[in-house]
Length: 260
Image (cartoon, rainbow, N blue to C red; front, side, top):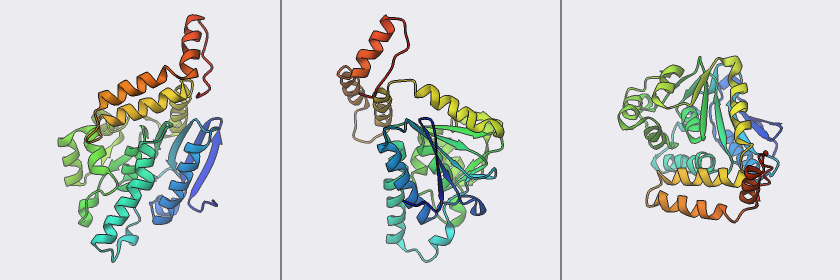
C-alpha cells in the first residue's frame, strides 16, 4: 500500500511507524486509521520486524486526537461504527499484537492520540508531552478504548478525574500515575525507545508473544488469566527457543533465539 499519512522506516529489527500529518498535529482521520491497520498487520506478519515504535511527525504532537471534522453529521449508528472499526482494526490489533509495540510520545497526546499510546505495550514520553482525554468538552466520551485502558493504567478514581475534567496532565504527572513508563528530554526520546526495544529483542520472540497474551488476559472479561499463563508457560517447553535458552544458560553464553 502506498501510504499517504504514514512514514515507515526500518532500523534493524525495529520498524518505525510515524503518523505524518504534522500540519494537523497528526490527527487520526479515517484514512490514517485505515493505513495504520495495514501497516500494523504487515509489521506483525513480517518475520524481519521484531518490534514497533509508533510516533508522530514533528515536535509538537504525537497525535492531537481524532479528526473532529469527520464527526460532523454523524448519527448514533455511524458513531457506533466509528468506534467499533477503530478499536477492532487498530487499537486492539496493537494491544493484542504478538510483537512489542512502544509509543514514543512527543508533545501532545490527546483524545484518540492518548488512546493510541495506551494501546501500546510501553509508553515513553518526552518531557514536554501533555496528555488528556478532552472528549467531554465536545459532548462525547473516549470511544477508542480510552475509558477501559486508562482505568487499567491509573485506576478508577484518576481515570474518572481525567475524563470528567478533560484536564491535561504533564509528562511528570503521567509518570507518577503510571500512565507512562519513562520520561526523557525530547532529544533523547527515540534513543530511549530504541534502547528498551533493543533489549526486549534479545529475548525469545515466542516467549514475548506469550507474555503479552498472558498479561492481556488479566483484564479480559470471562478469561481466567492464571489459566492462560499456565497454558502459555507449558507451550514454551515445546519450543526450540526454550531448548536454546536453557542450553545457553548452562553453557554460560548468550542465547541465539530463532522464534521457533
